[in-house]
Structure formats: C-alpha cells, structure tokens
Length: 475
Image 1 (cartoon, one colour):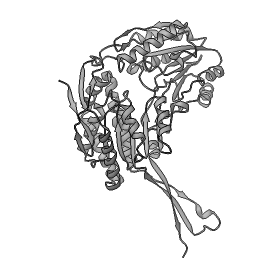
Image 2: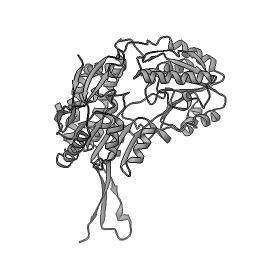
Image 3: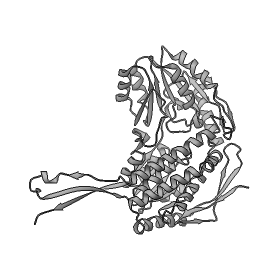
Image 4: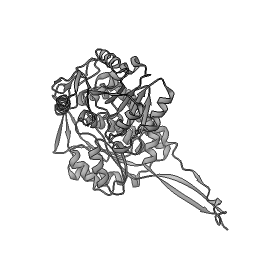
C-alpha cells in the first residue's frame, strides 16, 4: 500500500480531490499518493503566509530555537528521510545519508545566523551640515518568500530555501518538485512539531506550469527563490517584475586536468564525482578539459577507476549510481549520446540504458557544438576534451552560456591562480571536482547559471532588505 500525504497550509494538513502519484524511481511502482493543490488552495496558502507574516512575527531568538529544534528532530529521524529519498528520488543509500547530514548543517547554520542579522553604521556626520546627525542600517524581512525546489536534493535544497527565509523573519510558500514532494512534507511536519506558528510555512504540491505560474502572478509574494532550469528561471525573471529573485539554474561544469596535475587523484575524484546520483546535480563534472600530453594516461586511469563503481539498486549499501529520475530522462541522455556518436564522438565506456538506469559513460572526440558538451546533460555522462594551451582552453570553455562552478587539477600555483582569475564561474575548485560544496559557503553562478547567492548567511542577506535609519540630534 502506498503512503498518503496532504498539503500543509496554515498549520493544517489539507486533503484535496486532486491527487498526485509519486513512483519509486527504481521499481517504478507507486510509492505515495498526495493531495494536489487547486488554484483555491494556492490562494489560501499565500493568504495564510501573508497573514502569518503580519501577525506572528518571531523574535530572532525564537526563530533560532525553532530551527534548532528542527535540526535535532532531523537528526533523530535521519533514517526515515533516507528511506524516503531512496524511494522517491532513487538516491543511493550512502548519498541519501550524506544529504541528511548536510541538511542538518544547513538548518543549524540558519539557526545560528538568525541571531546575527545586523546592519552597520553610516557616517553621515562627515557630510557638511549633518554634523549633529547619526545613521545606521537595519535588515528587515522581505515578507512572503515563494520557494520552488528541484528533485535532485529534495531535502537539502528545500532546507536552503526555507531555513534562511524563516531565520530572516519571513513567511514561506514552498512548492517542491512533483517527482519528489514527500521529503518536503516530512520536513514540514518537523517544523509543526517544533512549534512554528501556523502560516509561516506552507507546502503545496502540483504542476510547476500551473502552480508556478499562479505564484508568479501573485503580488503578495515579494521574493522568489528557485532552483531549476535556466529556461524556467528566465521565465520567472520575466514574469515577476521588480520582485527580488534568487536563481540557481543550469550548468555544465568544466574541469581542467593540467599537464602538471596529480593524475591518480584527478582520475579517482572525477570517476566518483562525475556519476554521483547518476550525474543529476548542478555541479557534476561534465566537460573534462585534459592537456594533450596526459590525455591518454588520464583517460586510462579514469576508466580503470570507474570499474569500482557499483551501479544498480539504490537500497544497496554499496551502490554508487542508481536510476535517473525517470525513464524519459534516461532516454533523453541516450539520445544525446547517440547524436554525439553519429557526429563523430567515441564512447570510451558505458552508453547503455535499461529503463531508468543509464550506465556511467565517458565520451571522447567530442566537439563544442554537441549537446553533450554545450547543454547540461544532467546524466551520468562526461566528455573528455583535449587541449594544448591553457588560455585557449579557458577561452573555449568560457563560450558556454553557463557558469556555476568549475575545477582545475594542477600542482602549479601560477596555473591555478590564472584559472581562478579567468574561468567564468561563480566558484572555482582547485585540486578537486567542481562538485565540491559545503553548505556555509556562498554558492551561485554567473551568466545563465543564476542570480544571487545561497548558503544560510548569504541567503538571509538576499531575503532581507537594508533599511537606513537617520537620527537628527539637533536641539
């Protein structure tokens, strides 16, 4: 029997006539049945959020206490969340456990940052005629935050939206991905248990094209935080006028393997990072630019390291690569690889699909106009691209419309700093894969990869307004 879940609106669990089925991504069987939000439900949720924001403001320490309680509850219920993500997201057990551990950190950091929100002094007295004035800034909440999250990190990316928003004193309307909504509803139950006043967090489930559109058109939502495709992010930006936005969008992470790199370390690291969660993360290494003098050696070492990857059932403790989020997405990856093959690319290893499973794949002899290189593949597929001169390599990889994170493996400090100054990304990781992220760091991209920064401290800055206060001390 599948589990049943309802919407969370104004502190209550609301059943609706509309239903959404969530499938187990490995077995393809029904895992859960959820109530689906109607237009009226969305309106009710926004109204509840706005009313709660106006009437149920919490002091910073109260926000801290609630977020701390949720942190502790999440630790206690870790295995429940792990089991949920394995089922609805197809995330391998060890990666699901890592995600819960990271979400605990995100919650804990947000709780701490709730007590540190502050402005700064402004020396207006230095201006002629203002000698008897003093000024400072304060940071105030933006109001109602509309949060839209993707399937690939159904717990931690939800935490990155709602925890800083609540820490900053806002109310939140969350729409999780339709393919992985159960995790978000379980998290909402922890907030309820921790004593969050009704209406400050509302979770609705349904089609992004319907609910997302309604959210975009509602003037009661003052700030949007969205993680997803660049195409949808652009529409959100176009449709929300002058509202504040935090956009974490697409990417096709480049990683440079320099002629002076530690090839064993690079090969082992990228053999793991390139295929973690079936390549379905925004900072998965996708384009590997390898110096011609070490290309063959690196390629051999990486394919050898890939033999240790365990592919299959995400419930297996040893599994490294499980299913993709859907059969349709696996078919898309298969089509992109076949298109590259027909255009001259070589499949070094992998390239096989079985339902939603796609084997870890390495391509060589690719060109910059192939979809597997130019677009975000979001699948367990990496491409090896040979280069000769570093400046030409960086010029080529910068042609991408994306720029979230990249990496470089090198023992040469000058080379590392040259890359740091010239690779057009929001973050460059040296001697590690582009996939490196800890949750307290500023995280965000440039170009079509996004707008604004995540990380609790930085999200709080995005989700508050700076207000100037001037005191006239004249008698």
